[in-house]
Image 1 (cartoon, one colour):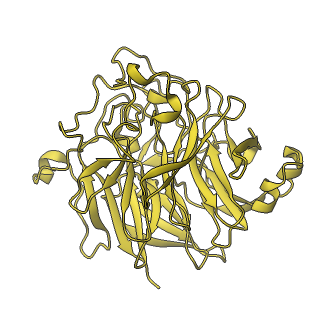
Image 2 (cartoon, rainbow, N blue to C red):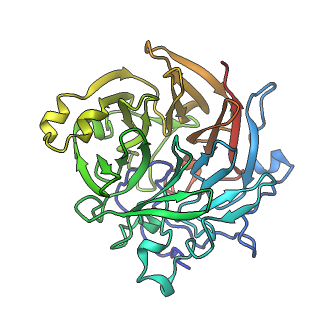
Length: 397
């Protein structure tokens, strides 16, 4: 299977969610022989530096993974949980997996889809190359977004894709390949939301800074608002995690483009923000679906919703509260429809909270990906010395 090499140098700035691991590790990850992630964690928290749960924290551990790194999570209405383990600076056996109630990791939709090595190089559309996002839509279908950029070194020709899976059969039912005009070599398709009402999908593209709009009926995709200011990182900010500036080994400050994305419950508005930014934006999905509108015309319809915390993942509940995984202070916050920012939970175990998913019984799921402790954004020294997690918590009604 594909394994990053130790001799690669630090690459230029890239921008994506739960990503930024461009200084490559000296070896592949070490899943168990049966393909399961290592879930055991040392009980000596002093030795490992593992953050401890505060008293009365509402966060419950769904699963813990010593390695490889988890980024995305999706939860079906029946409670089935899926995880996304991208091929950044490790080589997970199961980059897309169903997570068992016992924490086990099962390749999804099957083991063949999870293979990426020299024997399958001529089949980039039939294998997970470097999946970035897993998402469950309102109809209970599962979607996997694969930017196909292993090691964040550029897209594999023919590899970028959006794949729809029917969980009732565990079979792929739609596979949309993106041309280079949509997913260029330096692109990084980041996160996806599916509009089941209008049969469209919307994606943040973080490598260059843009949105991608897909007509799911025809499979045609368009890149819009490329390099618009609302898509780009704010390079004037000093955004931190664990109190430290995010700088690569060469001293360059992190600057991540369009990343977080959310679709309103009525599917009338799409929200997004660059990761290293304190600004939130939205636009009517009706405008995005209108292929006759130019970027200039679309730009006129963008709404600047003002200041919010720096965050990675976003999601919107039935009351139109926008949840944000705010990594600067180990927390989850929400923006009310009136624009008020409220603390939902603060817990030191939220080491770079990343992706959200809503589950049954009013549960909110979230991953922690510890981006800031990885090689690239910790001055070339990996300090990810505790587990990656999937957490869940009951939301107040």
